[in-house]
Image (cartoon, rainbow, N blue to C red; front, side):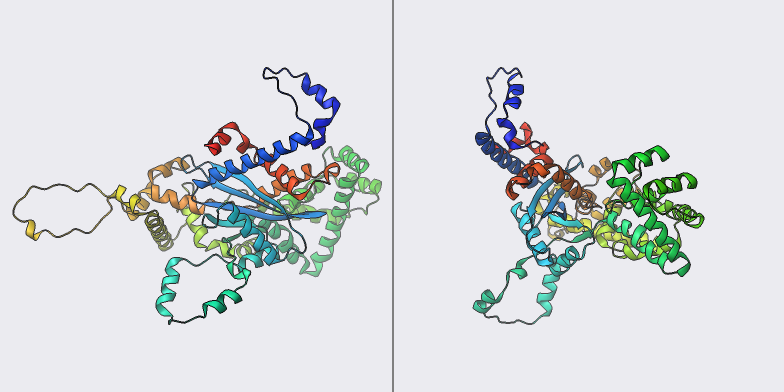
Length: 492
């Protein structure tokens, strides 16, 4: 992206003037171009809010990016209820001043959610495993369901409270409520492949020394190759490929980086180290890299939930890190309501019945919350019977849905479809799918927002105000909501 002052450049204006136009349109100067951007931002925001009005379930991702200044980025994700196509947008990239404490994070998140009317729509927020985000969601959990509140009201005695004292004593923190918190699966797997494996390797004196020395030499090689163009050219001459640098947002990046070094023959690798002024690898360290790649290769290919043979340490780490998710109700309903999985991954018969009952109960809850108008659509029309003189003995029949949730779940589980289109035949299951599959498994979308931020906040543009920076970034990320179709709908 160029500077806003570019529109005042004489060379730029001469280029634009060469473009033929039938409407006699002239390029505005910066003073008139700045209000134009403000107006376009308002239109984009109105179009985004209009698109979210008809959405029942949304999820968000959040993270904090620091580049001399700190910014909190938030993206939103939802399904099109008709086509089941995923959509995304950026809600904010706000400046965060001071320390990134849990209460500051919670207040900013709630303010962003409330500004778009998402307090009752957001089913989850996905973040990394950083302690300040985790504490924010633990301190300000979502409100309890109505059923739990009714049970508490029945059990507890009546207590009288001084209203004036309560109004003056309640702090702002008590009013903050955040959606359920999901930890980024990519970041969690990255912790397994790095931190947990490192703990295991450093727990034994025999592997501790060779592991640390080998990784230290690899790190020195990565640093040299990434910061020096001369070193990068020398690496490419030797291996015909560039070295990869590990990244915390990809769980297999550390494996890929070590594997790329291990692919270089030992004599060529040591010759390269001598040229770069790095300590050479000995036979034991070189063999360690190959053994490490063999052990970590199954985890590197874990793109989908496949059954695979993992090493003992990886299996234990996965069970520990994902213990909250493996038996989580929301995660179970997300898997069952997805036609690709259903109950195919469950072997135990009793467990299958338990999960089936869970899906039936959730279908009933979501169907009842949809309103009485939706219920009447499923009730068959009353059959008119002729008068026979036995009307006195006729009693009012109990209301019964012709297509119960239990029957719909049975038909859904027995159907053989794998595509999402099959959910149109099962409206109750479709609602469950929309609610529990809306959250993204990773917080990578907000990382992509920050990568755009790096393009906007270049050294030549570091004098941008925080508000202008956010507006430019959101308009770049939400360019689809600046299309004429969206703008026409928002103006109606």
